[in-house]
Image (cartoon, rainbow, N blue to C red; front, side, top):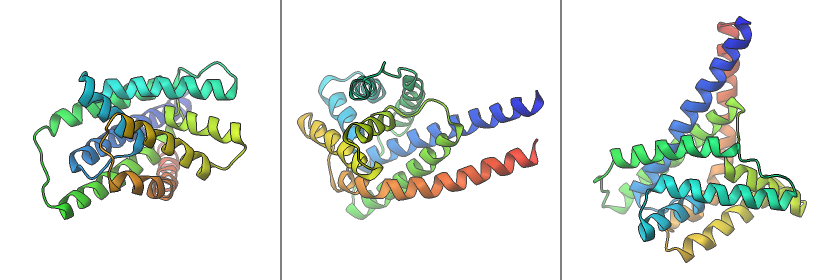
Length: 209
């Protein structure tokens, strides 16, 4: 019983801390104003047009991705993915509010802050995945695209980001060089940090059985 409770505790810890870092990284890339990932650009664009909050629009786009994913896979949409969305969007709204008024002027400063945000996002994503709870809606949609078109993860990710890029353009989201870079750099970075997060998780389970 103690072992099971310890395992659950560490899973929850990695899940929550990972999502918190993920959200903080998103907020940092928004403040950097160098371009955010495609689907984040959709949420920011909708926020600038219709207000509410960025986190609220993240939940709306997450629901859309889940419904589309379920339709592509011919299954009941996995609404449990919204748990991840609700947690992360709440953190995003908090960090955006916390950094309200922060402005970066020189382009080198924007680039530096963007890269810092990318690294934080990658660490957060790699960490929350260790928890193995509800997946992020965009991951669910990406897997649905992979299964529908019988392709690999890299191609499915490109299709996923490409569709987000088009929507972001239509809603005048903050598309920039960072948006294009996101398509290519997140995959390897997330894989790298996920491996280290798994090793840390196993080490904690070994030290606190």
